Image 1 (cartoon, rainbow, N blue to C red):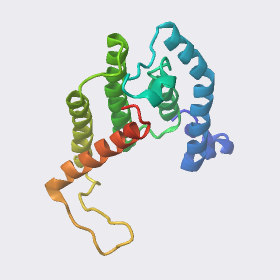
Image 2 (cartoon, rainbow, N blue to C red; image 1 turned 180 degrees about the vertical axis):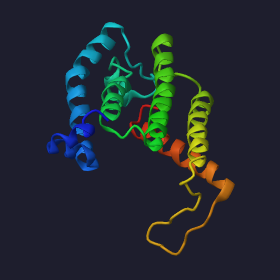
Image 3 (cartoon, rainbow, N blue to C red; image 1 turned 30 degrees about the horizontal axis):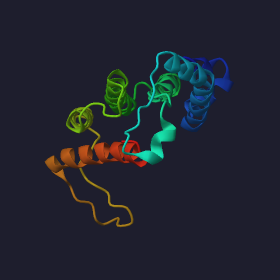
Image 4 (spheres, helix red, strand yellow; image 1 turned 60 degrees about the vertical axis):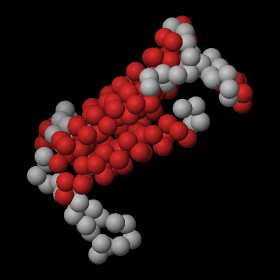
Amino acid sequence: HLLVPLAAQFTLFNVFRYITFRSVYALLTALIISVLLGPKIIEWLKALRCRQHILEEVACHQAKEGTPTMGGLIIGAALVPSVLLWADLTNVYIWLTLLVFVGFGAVGFWDDYTKVVKKQNKGISPRAKLAGQLLVAGAAITLLLFQPAYSTVLSVPFFKHIQPNLGLFYVPFAVLVLVGASNAVNLTDGLD
């Protein structure tokens, strides 16, 4: 939005029209922000004593005791400005993706903040975490369905003739996919 209008005077600015160009520079922008801000945020979190507390029953994770928590702040600080700078902000799907990212990040922050305040590994209850994720995913999918170009037809990979229309069942299916993918990432780190 800032540089494409200048393409009429300077043809060099036409490169900003290409999604591949913007994608590469969005990646580089996020990388630079995370490299520059990451160490400062980690030091700030250490100063605030935002440290991971490990369950005593999990002996193999005791070495991780004291690791700064809330590292998602670094990811958010790098990704959100990069998207806002390089993405097509007239595209509603960009805003829906940011809604899910920031919403799930807020649930994760709430969980980590609770762990730090209680000084133990148990953050918010699993029900509260799941409720927050369901609320964010449900809102995003509902808003997605209001887009005229969006369809509830499911394309099944490798089977191009199998395309069921899920209709109203699309909402719980899509919410399950979003929440399931989020929790799969959380569970693979072995600490949750």
